[in-house]
Amino acid sequence: MTQTELPWLFRGRRIRPYALAVSFSTLVISWTLLVSRDGPGAALDRTVPGFFVGGFGMFAVVALWIGFWWRSDKWMQVGLILTSGVWCARGAFILLDSPGLNEAVGLSFCWVLASVGAFMLEHFTGASATRRRSRE
Amino acid sequence: MSDATIAMIAGSVLVMIQLVVVRVMDWYFPRGRMSKRVAEQSVEQPVEHTPEQEDPNPGS
Figure (tube, each protein chain N blue to C red):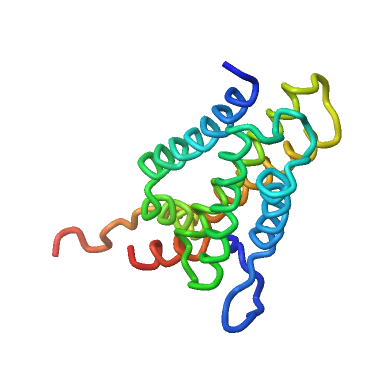
């Protein structure tokens, strides 16, 4: 079974490259939704759903960093599943607001695929799954 | 219902779908059974058929 971590340590903690990347990308869109409020798609600016999506995005970022710092697989999975929802919502926002595929929609779809895959990988083949199998 | 609300619901639905899929897969393919099946496939060997040998001394 594959693992989701690199064989290197940073301050005694395993590095998960995708989780690190998605945490920063989600931080960027959460910032644009909550602070700068000028993200792609007019539906995102200063709307209640936009604040919700941005808020969940920030929560997902915090969950991923907690999962990394406190070595918690559960928090890591929470963060990954939430990022998939945030990127799906963002992509749907932009698609409904400006009909037709564009770069922002395409990139959001790609991040959704990657987050869903990473969550599934983390749940079924991650370190916690390996520990559960070794106990059985 | 506004477009933004619909999009937010779409994100929530995606999260719930993933949770359901994970639950179903954990229930249908318990990790213990899955790992045993994988282990059995990796060590499976063909069964050798050997002819039965007749008793050389049937009366003793």
